[in-house]
Amino acid sequence: MSAQAEWLGDTRPLMGTEVSVYLWSDDPEAGRRALDEVFDEASRIDRLMSTYKDESEISKINREAADRPTLAGEELFGLVRRALDISVLTRGAFDITYDSVGQYYDFRERQRPDPGTIAAARETIDYRLVELDRAASTIFFAKPGVRINLGGIAKGYVVERGVDILRRHGIEHAAVTAGGDTRLLGDRRGRPFVVGIRDPRQDGEVAISVPLEDEAISTSGDYERFFDEDGVRYHHIISPATGEPAAGVHSATVFGPDAVLTDALSTSVFVMGVDRGLTLISTLPDYESIVIDASGKVYYSDGLRQPETPSTESEKSP
Ligand code: ADP
Ligand code: MG
Image 1: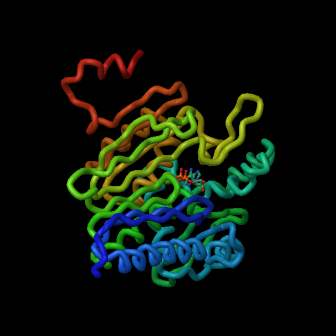
Image 2 (image 1 turned 120 degrees about the horizontal axis):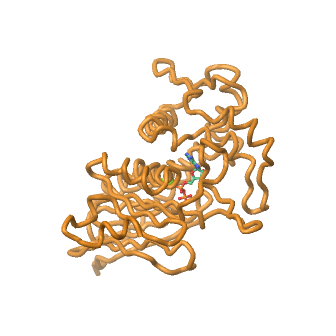
Image 3 (image 1 turned 135 degrees about the vertical axis):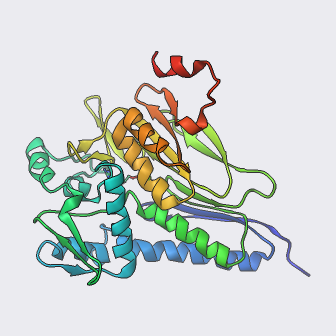
């Protein structure tokens, strides 16, 4: 008896969030194997890049790189290099050294650094303090106290790698998600996938649905890891300029061809705010963005707006 072609899917807790894989396979057994391989890959990358694991490569670099140039494997070195390029592109809104302050937040324990700690640690938030030696494959921190964290880019990397694995298995229709980052392979067999952007203040509700094929989409929100105190929301997206959670935006979504970039850019647009964020996106031909601000108002990048829509102006300035 021959097995039927079907959709297969699974979700597992990984990387401090949930990773899920959904795919169409002509051979369910082979499909299952491909699926397992994607989860294995996500754990492998997490073991390499998680700052919560003392034995990870990134933890070693955080311990040693201020004392001496520290050897980094090709993969970690490459992702750090991409992160630094994105810092240049976003004029420092995306900055993996945010963790110099970020390390003092514990959202589960409702802990945050006091103003003195923030002021001192801010001196070590600057991506230019991370010096890469490409020939030697080493990373050096130009000041003691610098720490790097790839939380704003590693999930995009995982879903991109996941889709590569599925492609290699001959799969043509799939969705791989890690937290707020999704990479789609092909379509849903004749129609697009539909990805929901969450309502930032209504748990479980979808604010906007985006039909997409063969693309990546990432959302950064202030509702993922946070605690509220005296009417202020303390959340996990840090403005490198202040060392404090970025205010003004509730969620920023970016979609385009590469999940590594959509992941980093959704974090960046969140930090930059509506105007600067959407201006940046308008310079990137294949990328679009949807931002929900702190009053719940929705903004779209140029490529999503129809020039003849008369409401465009009045939407911008109420
Ligand atoms: P998630 O999918 O977890 O919501 P995001 O893409 O929104 O992830 O990124 C948030 C994560 O990015 C934070 O948990 C932190 O690890 C990291 N991060 C926070 N602020 C910055 C920043 N300014 N630049 C780069 N990374 C950041
Ligand atoms: Mg992101």
